[in-house]
Length: 372
Image 1: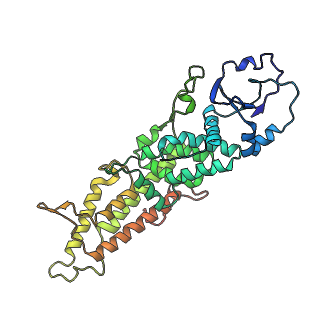
Image 2: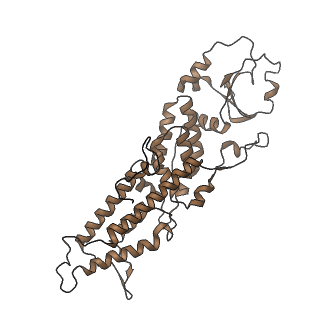
Image 3: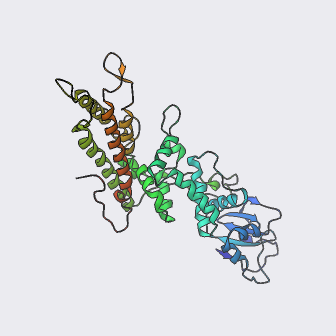
């Protein structure tokens, strides 16, 4: 950013600024004008100095006696997007609140986070990081809570209404060095098919894309944000490993699964534990029918598929051809299988940073499961 140092113009505003848009942040008693792109903001020095040492230091620099003025005030040009400045000032003056988390909050969060990081406004930065951590958690329990929040009362899964497209989050996290939200973001992205991953994400409109005076201030054309080649490789490689983990679980823990040592049917005459064997086979078939999320619109979602497998243990809406019923699985085998599936989910979650190439200096290798 740079302070104005040109000679004063008789009109009180340099001719070059005649076409600037006066934003909603234009206070009659303001004493400093911030210029970003084609937008101008007349605000209060004290408000900026109070929250940012950077602005405090900038305004304390002695200025020449003869200066250009904008609407009777000194002005400062910032090399930031006008939308980011708008969101940043909104947060400083009005606070940063999220009554109900929604995906369309992202542009404001990203803008405030960029400028609060750049200008050292820690309380706004912490609030943005806290919100991002809710949408892109670092724990499996947090992920499960996020997924539950993205499912409505009718069972419809609508993650893009709650959280923005993961490509946007990945780019923001890489730009601002926020590694803790990357595993969840890469996993979310990896649930899409490869062609959808490669097609990128549309950049949502920001404050000045829909500004009433946009005819005076043409905004950049909306465009698609795509991953760089290295990030695409990370995503597709991680996607493959997540799917292989599911295939390994089915082969080792379902298709060849032995009943529990305490199986209630092990002493039945004729065919011990047949009911439990058949139930494991039935779970396998149902997972194969919905593998990759085809049946419910969730592609390559191993964590969800494992949850579905556990939920089958208590469901009573299966059919034997005549009536609805539950699995004929004994309690001991249910407990044993549920523990196995939960352990597999924890192993998958713990392996995500390495599978998606997010562990510096460490090559992707087997983690928790045999992926060979």
